[in-house]
Length: 546
Image 1 (cartoon, rainbow, N blue to C red):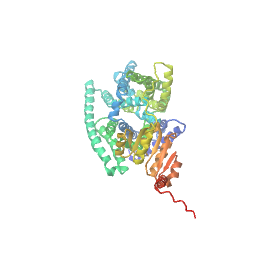
Image 2: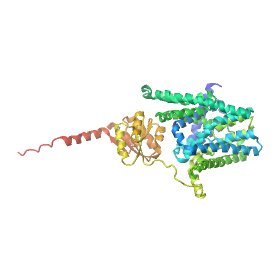
Image 3: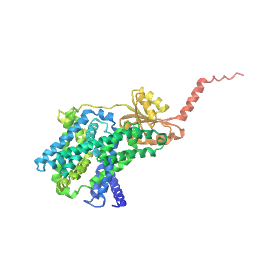
Image 4: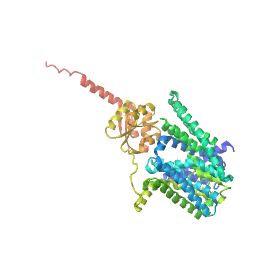
């Protein structure tokens, strides 16, 4: 396939995806629906405008890898352990229970044990890309139900490797011993890969990022970030392990570095581009004509998946002691079939699943993905209604976060002084600074800290902008401050913004951008000098009478 044809197809998909995504956003719907529909209409089953569908789908899978890399950067080993048995244990139970129930149901309907097991593995996985995209857009990744859902999603992503192996061996007609040997072999390769990634991301990459020339150049850290995320995915693929899992491990190992948040911010634009391409590529796999002619079958499958998976996730979380309302909300969030299910379905196609069953899986997956923004967006409301209707579901305020947060951007002398005085008023201080030394000093004083460039929305989001009551910007550079104020006011119009103006000439621009209070440094210095003179200078001599 000509590279220019592939590039042309990518441009068409992204262009129409952006158009439909924008239209759906304008009517207050999720842009993901527009991306999926763009793929449906442009794909080989409708308008046939994309000629290199297989190659585009392969490229788009890099978006999922970068998504998992970003998740790994967010979830360090310590934070992953901190999620505890509730999220991780319930994830294991959910995957095992869903696989077993679907396998049993498939056998009852006469599909056979091998086909049933493949179908169970396909249905066990939910969409990390869709769910995390909506949770992030709504600022609910840090919520209790969002954290529960994300913990289960991570477990599902880790389960992709053994599930792919099992389905692959079943498709080839292998024995149970061959399946076990394949799993053990992959685990061994995975352990070698973990050791190699540990050395790279705990010794080599942090030293590169801390070096003076790289830290002072904005392009070089971006190149290192992209190379880290995509390179680890390629290394995992070469070793026979899931590329997405390899990227996740790389992010997890790099997460302990103070540069983790900035790396996430650096790759966010590329991740968004590739994820958008991924959603459009997934849409190309569906056939609207087939769905219309099998509407009852597809509708029944969608209902079973949404209700069944929500119930299984709820039960798994309750088994490990999660509160009912949050368990229900997390279950509703995960009521779909995920992107990695396409991989399993493609492996099983022909040998384990006939063409009709394959089309049913693809159609159900695409439709549940389209429903995901509505499910995730309304999960807390639906859970609350169920809580009022059914008394066993409690409404505990489990996991409430910090309130009255003050974000201090820049931890120089001005930032330190502001932090000290604001903390005295009972605020929880979170410092954002690009200098890792400043961030360490902030933590030593008992403040929260984020190492990164506050001009990036990803960095501000990680600092907790959606929960902040005040943002204080003490940076000296006027252009950077203007960009930060603009982003803060756009993301959270209700937050109070206090800004330092290094020069008097920037006062008007900062006020027009939306800062509530601007401290004019030149004016204040002049006033303080005059006040000091007034205190030190001798009283003027009275005029002598003639």
